[in-house]
Length: 272
Image 1 (cartoon, rainbow, N blue to C red):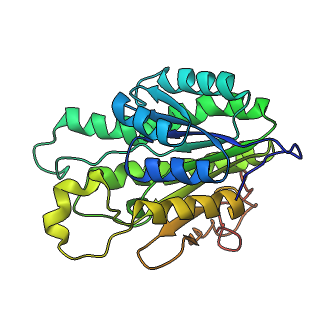
Image 2: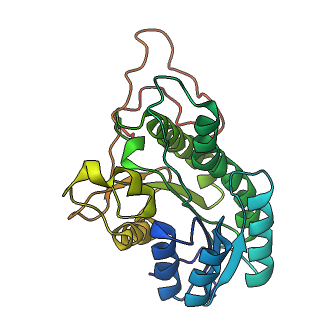
């Protein structure tokens, strides 16, 4: 699978956040295996350099939750590769509290910074770059916790629901410009992020990072704007079907609620 956004037979170029380990590293290898040039972004400079060296790519270090970091990383990747086609906003973190008793505000803001701010900052910085490339792909690594509640970590659940909602809302706005936005929602994956919960999970089946990377490849190749694909152990990635909310009864049809909106609040017939 080589993703191209125009008829030009040029090599795909990609930027992956959180690319120094876990799903990000597996996705960087997957993309490089298709012939793509890859920029690996991670807060851990040594990890970014290790993966970038492995895939003959570009290593970039920085805290993706900080304003300006991703804009600079995208600019450097574009200058190095000449263009940029794929942006994988993959970096993420889990909470260290239950989010109910004695809320740790610093931890709460840390989680939202990485899981939510990074996606918003990354997408808004990526759009001008992809416009210059005449289109492209943005894939966000969300979580199954963005589709269903995870009572063990309500703050993580909150952040991933926010990401899924954001992806679904921005996708129709950007689709007409040839920029396709999707989310991948994996279940429990065998990555360092899971370390604090390993004892509780016991022998629960886990995804390999490579399983999620394969699903990302499928989304890049086949995903339609705004789709969220879930990934579970032993299953290929699949499109998640959202149930539409019934619209108001009586009166005129509901107006569009923003640029690129589908036109009606009752999405039951077409919301996928």
